[in-house]
Image 1 (cartoon, rainbow, N blue to C red):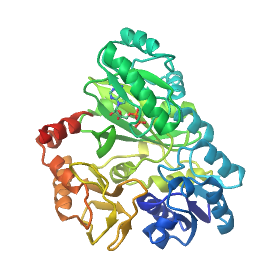
Image 2 (tube, rainbow, N blue to C red; image 1 turned 90 degrees about the horizontal axis):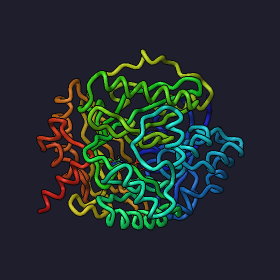
Image 3 (cartoon, helix red, strand yellow; image 1 turned 30 degrees about the horizontal axis):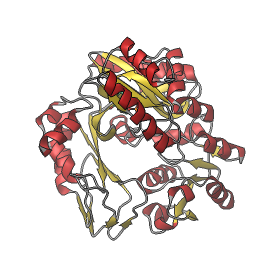
Length: 447
Ligand code: ADP
């Protein structure tokens, strides 16, 4: 097993990885930008190295600085966390070339799944069900029009390099599709430096269902599904496990489909296959070759520390479980809390004047906040995850409501108030929602 791991990330996710390391008796190295010198992930780590100025591309995305930090501290392995370098094939390769262990999948797997056009071809080969769409990248706007005529409107243009919901535009008829094609391409070019786009049938009322996977290169097990349909601008806001929209047969079916495809792929490490689910059918949309923010709710219902397992398989150990050893208990919900105005969603960095995190049975708060902490304006606005477990979904919902009332983050705007509104909605309480529900709710409450 490793003696020392460098965690190439910041904030709550760096802390999350640190905690798993500590429980495994592994020492940790934090890296940080000058803006994060006072951050909790730096305070708790055994050692820390400043890797550059506040801008992410000069610090958290600075490959030479991170590799140098690993070399001078004598780290054995590098964990990329989530975001930043976690799906950067080049970084994964360089970590390995410099003699460190990469705590993540084979770089080739990152490459294949990172390009959504290549990923869909691979998914087809692995026998996964796909959303009807273009066979590969679209060659021109006329190609898009021909393809849409074939699969039917509405049609969705998506960026091959996509992520975070960027470069995704709907066309409801030919003129709006032509516009969507141009808009998606320019958004993709700006966000990813690559304007390759493809097409999928736009589903009108799907749920987003994803399956947590963990493989050791020989076997891949599934850890059940998460329902991440509560989204704003195609980004997840609330997640729950299990999904209130699936029955036992559907749950088992999608878990097995995902695990057997990932086994055929020879996958090692933690990963997630994402599907849309509508009218009893599942459609693969992408695979994330990393840990996900919402892995926490899976941990709550399975009792398994996924980061620990990810580190173990990276060190070459086989999975210590069989599929039947993974059992599920109760219900878990995660609320992503952002430093943003809860109505306009404008980021609200600044100093935390008062902080109180809820506690009690079944409550976990993953956050790097503390009283007096200054949230820098340079990074993602997610500042905390409220993760709640209950024996039943109803118990879990009542507990989430209680925790939201108790949570205090003073001095800045947060989306706590948005979560309080969501948890008060009958549709949400009934589990009766799809991926468009939150947008519609927000639009309705504005008018
Ligand atoms: P990204 O990598 O940008 O997150 P995804 O392919 O994972 O993109 O899709 C993100 C979200 O966009 C999905 O969870 C879903 O809400 C929506 N979406 C994606 N594909 C479709 C589709 N074919 N029809 C309707 N909504 C879709």
